[in-house]
Length: 295
Image (spheres, rainbow, N blue to C red):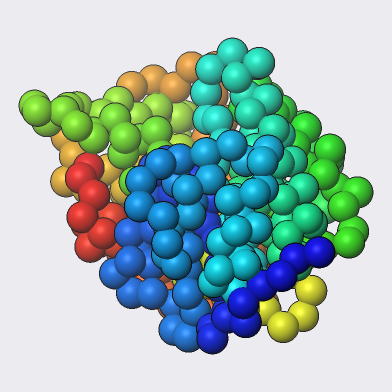
């Protein structure tokens, strides 16, 4: 039995606030907290209190239960933690973390869990925008690990679980991270295809992503089980490099490269009202800078 203090405001818990995407979302919500909500950030160590939860072992929900008892129930959990690279065994952390969080949510009475998955579960298909009901066919170990995580938890029905198939988050993506932390400005190499231009991908700015997460947490109706999360349209990677002020040049694309990989966002657009600028490289770069992140 959970004995909890009645919270004055709804409370949301962010698990994984130290990774690149998690830090961006956390920074945004420290800058401009969602109105009428208390956001709690999970950490492995440090100050513990109403806004921070020391929860180093996600398999042990005692710290979470104690926080709820002292500060009140949690209405939504965001699982932004996970492994993005490494050996297959290391990538299994995506399931282990998500499974532990879902188990903790069930034990602690948290009714909604939003889990970061990835557009990588779809794989690639020439000139095709992937819908949520398309058959996944990942082509790399990371996409396979995210899909394994989804499939393993898809049977959970006693609480709401949503898998967010997130596209490239500007500032946490491979292209812009190649610029990050270099003392000397690095020249980016971008694949050039037969039509003379480079790749196109689904992207979303970090502030837009934070806003989407907020809308999903507040939804009065059931959340989608699977949701593509990206700004409408595709972003030319050359345009993103230009907007970032990067030095770049084209190189011939290898035969196995795909020019266009993206997701359809019709379902998300019924939930979140995108402003026109949110689909532009200029705005995405502006969002990264406004959060104090370097590229």
